[in-house]
Length: 115
Image (tube, rainbow, N blue to C red):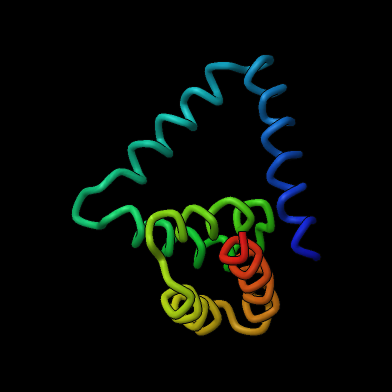
């Protein structure tokens, strides 16, 4: 994917989910509540939680998840080195398929850091 593809993906997913929110508001409300609760500071800070989300996104092979969680990790202060290190954990756990998806994280990271 090119840099613009991830930006477009985030916009497209956000727009589509707005339609789901209209059709099934309780579902989206419930998900948003879970997300807000899970990502707030506790024993782990939000940056660490976003790095975990990046690793899980790689393992799940979820491009939209990568497109959202990499910029969120960076907004919470994750560095290039921290993202690269979390990718090594994701690849260790997921093998070759996770290695292929690690490249997607690097693309989104470069796009986000360049903005």
